[in-house]
Length: 198
Length: 198
DNA sequence: GTACTAACTGACTGATCAGTCAGTTTGGGA
DNA sequence: TCCCAAACTGACTGATCAGTCAGTTAGTAC
Image 1 (cartoon, rainbow over the protein chains, first blue to last red):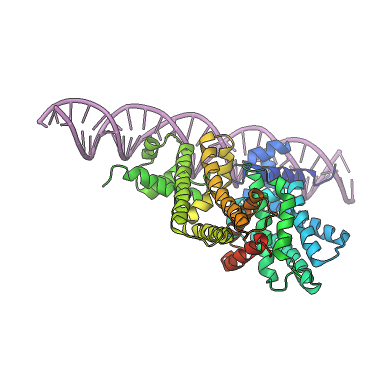
Image 2 (image 1 turned 135 degrees about the horizontal axis):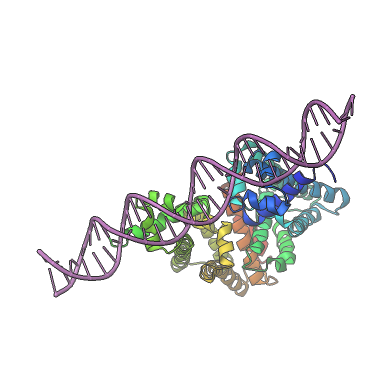
């Protein structure tokens, strides 16, 4: 058994619980029982509950950044437009494959803590910077190869697309509509929004 | 002093607190002290804390539905496209003018409660139906007067636009980006997404 | 075996909070 | 004036929970 198994088990269970039930509604006793350890053990590895949350967010940040850099190492794109649409599709895919990460990013506590805890804020900014930069790079590339409308502000458009994708992910997890059925339409909508009409 | 003043004061303070701090992080004692009444008084007017929350959501529903019906009674539009863009702009305006309503709609507890409480679910569905139907009506109108792309599924596009607007509102309240600076771009992006290119 | 440390634990504490209850106050009708 | 019901209250309770602490166990170096 590896040395850090208990610590990483705590982290994994805490991710599931914080994402699924929120910070306040998750008790340290629940995390402990889910990880099959004594309650006090968590406080040996993590100073406070808030500290545990920040560590969870750090692991989510690492996960998201790694997944995206892996994707763009492997994929080749024929144009900036195709790269943008690929990034949107991959973002939506990640949100399904790693629901917990994106649920955590929708929790209010994450942003409330970020307002007072610089470490938490840094991880959050790293995540958003990673996401926005990918869209912006694709848009810039597309303006160079003429696949993207030249009139767009690439920065602002990148933010709008991020907001749109986030909004779709949110709509789906709200359980009011089946937003999964929209994935095809979203890509088409994005295309119409940014493509260069020759 | 009107008879219902204390009950409506409780409702108003609870709206502010639930929206700003969430359900679990708001104590009944806080609501009471903000409303300047004894703690037990709340339980005279509302059976439980959950009951108070549902009443708050009901008042938010009433507010949103009223505001939109008022807006569309007064405004005239030259085309379906202009009606859609007007609705998007008004939605964004409402989110600024009535931050609390939309903050409450972003709280996870709202959706978690809706999953087990039919009354809560009904109010939520009423709100979303109101918002989606407005976009869908405008899109249908625009397909009739040729201002909107005929190829679009109006239902799916209405959902995507709702997700986009919600995403922008969320991005702004996250305090990571100043999304207010995007409002002009959003309207332009929507136009490019749905307009009929002659 | 001994000694030392990191990992781990059960039992506890003080604070917080939703909800209760037995009673008091208030306002209006006869 | 008396009466009654609705509105309101202070004092309380039982449960929950983050965090502490004094101690035990497991691993490792000599």
